[in-house]
Amino acid sequence: MSIKCVIFDMDGTLIDSKKAICKTINHMRACMQMPELDDDFIMSIINDPQKNSIKEFYGFDEITTDMRLKFEKEFNKNYELYAVVYKEAMELLEALKEKDYLLGVATNAPHATIENILKNCGILGYFETIVGASKGIAPKPDPAMLNIIRDKFGVECAFIGDSAKDYLAAKNADMRYVHVIWGRDEIISEIQNCKTAKDVIEALH
Image (cartoon, rainbow, N blue to C red):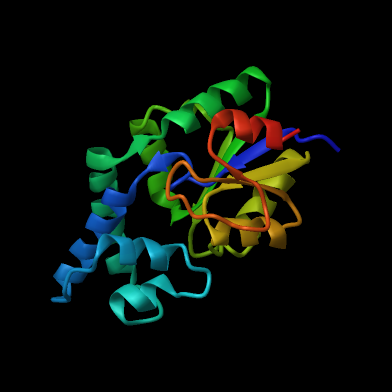
């Protein structure tokens, strides 16, 4: 079957959000009188499928509802200030829309924040559906998000991401995966690593 729908990871794939993410996490740590963490360390933990980010950053397994709401508020504020769309991602979105692909987003960012983030970055209108992490939807590398979108459209899908978590989510969903390195430059040796929008389009065929 040919690919009819392309699903995007958000952070590091569509949006350069490193500064926004790191500032949010360090703000939450400061509220708990915890020392600031290095930005590169934060990003390595977030993208490591073997790590529990909440445990690593805050010292416990699950966050409270109050903490989640505070995180989402700070998260939205910092994304408005610092997040920008990658040039290659913008080119890719325009090319895929011209080819009439259905487009979706599957991200481990809190579901309640995603629409506002994509709107502020000027790309919300490209997507037919968006799915983020929530109490009822497990984060990647669990395949739940990808399965939800594929089931919604009932067509063959591919997933574009930038991390081992994304790769494993696609593998767990038995979905074609395309890996991009214009954001964090994390190489996955056993698959093609795409540097440009043109590379991605060729990989989808």
